[in-house]
Length: 209
Image (tube, rainbow, N blue to C red; front, side, top):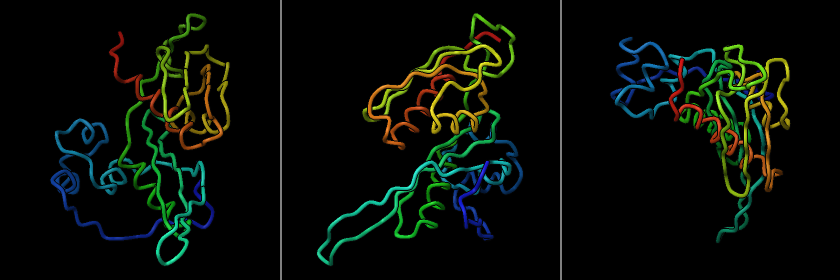
């Protein structure tokens, strides 16, 4: 888990502006499970940082984007960031700013607000060890022109995936998996988003304990 070079989290006093934020600050909700299962929407990134302080983050991609205005050409940097605790919780976000550092901060906060739970298991017929090292069943994800398929793998196989997908799977707490991708996989953001979309589907189907 590595932070972007030169990036340091700023200390600031958090004054909650939402009902959920006030409940968390009062200590009525103390875990991320209680926060995500509450009836209130998650709109403050400080909530996630309070109940999940061990959340790690890593920059996946930085792109320079340009647009023409009446005053001339404006250049900004679009940053893609992944966050996770290597124990089933993961989020992806993007941020855009004229300064890379500010873009990273915006992307991290966006990823924290998009935090979701990933169901893990041992769905491979070759293994059947019942430990949480892979996905419980095959899942697919799509973003733009990128298509991703994940299949359960036996323990010890490792992550049969590209570098970008490996980082995301490690942050989700998955250590063994088969992957298949097709489409314009050079687009890092779409590849990362398709990967997360596929992992999200593991929690949409109930499995036997």
